[in-house]
Image 1 (spheres, rainbow, N blue to C red):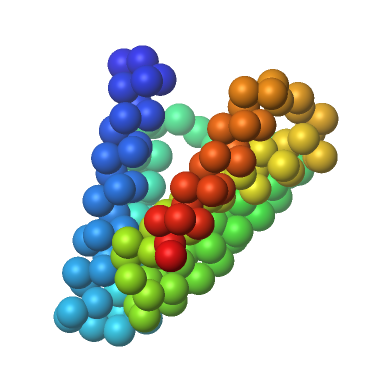
Image 2: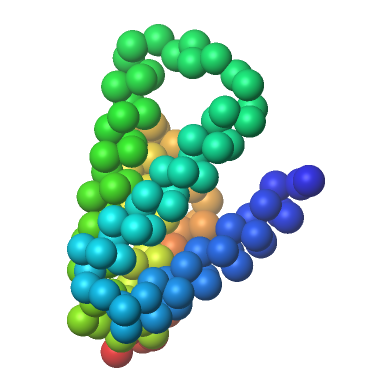
Length: 135
């Protein structure tokens, strides 16, 4: 499958993810929803890893970086479910969907990556759109 197909599937899964989480709040509070959804995510991760039959061959430095990524993702998820608990899904999702703009700025500063003018305009337009959708 191509990266475009995977990207579209990601878009669909993540787009429905926020909606399904919001519906789950009808049956429990943020802590229950967070725990059960995280447990489901961990189960999926473990299943994918075991099915791949690949050994863990990362060196310690990259294990630490992967661990930091997991902790940051998990922490973001805690904040996300708390925001979704009381906020409207139609406002929380567009605002939190701006996280790639943070990645772009961090990649510029930390990795020295360069972006083109059209890409910079795209980031500004995405930020503008998310703000307007959140109002």
